[in-house]
Amino acid sequence: MARGVNNESVRAQNLSAVLTHVHRCGRLSRSDLTAATGLNRSTVGVLVTELVERGLLIEGDPVARGTPGRPSPSVQPAERGAAGLAVDVGVATIGLAVGGIGGALEQRTVIDRASERRGPEATADDVAALIMEVTVSLGRPVVGIGVAVPGVVRRGDGLVRTAANLGWRDVPFTDLLTARLGQPCPPVLLGNDAELGATAEHLRGAGAGVDDLLYLLGGIGVGGGIIAGGRPFGGAAGYAGEVGHLVVNPMGQECSCGGRGCLETEVGQAALLRRLGRPVTPEGESRVQLLADAAAGDPEVRTVLAEAGTWLGRAVTSLANVLNPSRVLLAGLFAAAYPHLLDTLQPEVDGQTQWPNRAVMTIAPATLGEEAVLLGAAELALAPLLADPTAADRLPTGGRAS
Ligand SMILES: [Zn+2]
Image (cartoon, rainbow, N blue to C red; front, top):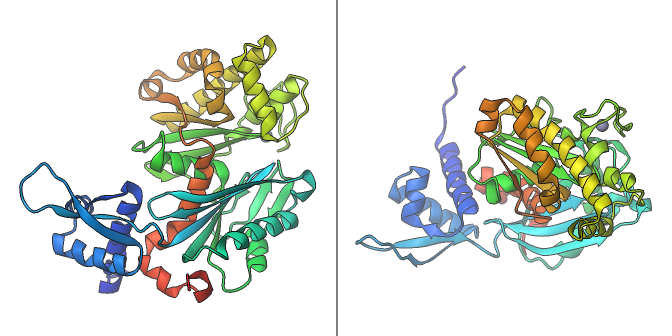
C-alpha cells in the first residue's frame, strides 16, 4: 500500500537535510545552504532558526560575496552543541574522542592496553571507564556512542561475530558496554574499524567527492571498506569488506580465519614482522621501527615491503576488477609505507587489472591518518541525530547537558 508523508515527517526530513549539509560542509552562507538543499529561502530560514534554538547551529556575521545585494548571514555548527562519543577499540590501544557537528574531534585520548585486558569483559570495563571520565565534565548532550572494532560486526544489533586479532567470537559488545554505563544511556552503535575509516575518508579526506571507493587499512591485520554509489557497502548482514581474507597466495601461511594465504598473512604488520624475524607485537613502536628502517634503506626491510607491494597489488587488481572503484586508498601501515610499496604495487595493478577498470582508477595514500577511524566512529555516533534532529528531544535526560 502506498503511504503518504505527513507534515511532521517532512519537517524532520528537511531539518535533517539542513543539519547534515552544514555538518559536512562547515560554515557557509544561508543563500548557499538554500541552493544546496533545494528548499526555498523562507523555509531554510525557519529550519535554521529551529536548529539554532536546539543548540545545533549558530548564525554569524554575513559571508562576504562577490555579487551585489544584501549579504547573506552565515550558518555554522555550534561548537559546544550536541556531541557524539567516538571510540576506537584497537588491539594494543583504545582511543576516544568527542565528535561534534561539523566533524571536529576534541578531547582525544589514547590508552595502551595490556594483552590480558583484550577480552570482551575487560575491554568493556576500560571503554566504560574512559567514557565516564570524559562525560562527567563534558557539559554537552551526548547523542550517541560510536564504537569501532577490528572485526566483523552484525548490522542492526552490533554483535561482534568475530574479531580474530582480539580473540573474540560472537561478543554482544553493545550489551556489555550499555550495562556498564547504566541508564539512561545514549545509543551505542558498533561498526567495523576499516569501514568507518572508509566513511571518514569519503566524507572528509582523500576520498571526498569520490562515490566509488576502495579503502585498505593496514594494521596488525588488514581491513577494508567499500563505498559504492556514495554509500558504505555492507552486504546482506554488514559483513562485506573483509579484504584481509582475500586469498592471494594459496601456498602462504595459515590464517586466523582458518584459511591459508590470505592477504592479511602476507602484508599485515604481524606478517611483515614475522618475515623479518622480529617479535610480533601489535604495539606502535614496532611499526615505527619498521618504517624508520625502511626510510634508512635497510635492505631486508625494503625487500619485505617490496614483496608486500606485490601481494597488495594482486589484491587491488582482483578487487578493482570486481568493484570498479575510481579511487583506491591505502591507509594505516600501507599509507605510512606507501613510497616503499609503490614500485612493486603499481606494475602489478597496471599489468593485471582489466584496462577499462584501470583507466578510471587512481591509487593514493589516505590522508586522515590515525584519526580516520575515530572520525568514522563519530559519524556513527551522530548518525541518529543527523537523520532526525528532533531525536534530541527524546534523549534520556542523563544524556543531555544539565
Ligand atoms: Zn584469513
